[in-house]
Image (cartoon, rainbow, N blue to C red; front, side):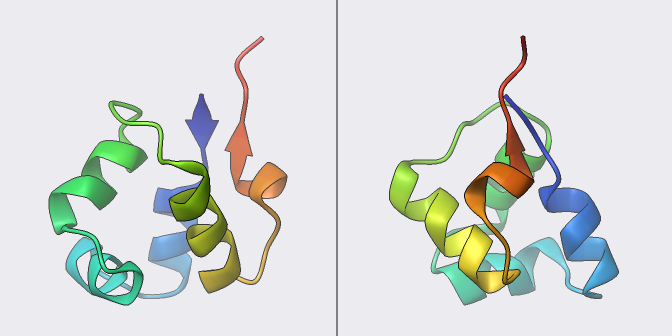
Length: 64
């Protein structure tokens, strides 16, 4: 699954650590999501979408 987390985080001027703290996850988790090594749980995907005031489907894209 592809995602736009890195682009959104950078546009917001946030470090991985700051985003992780806002979402109550580690910096490593944010890094793993951004690099595609980890697909977040539904609750974390929703938290990410809410943080960026967006829809889950606008941030996360299923590879066809």
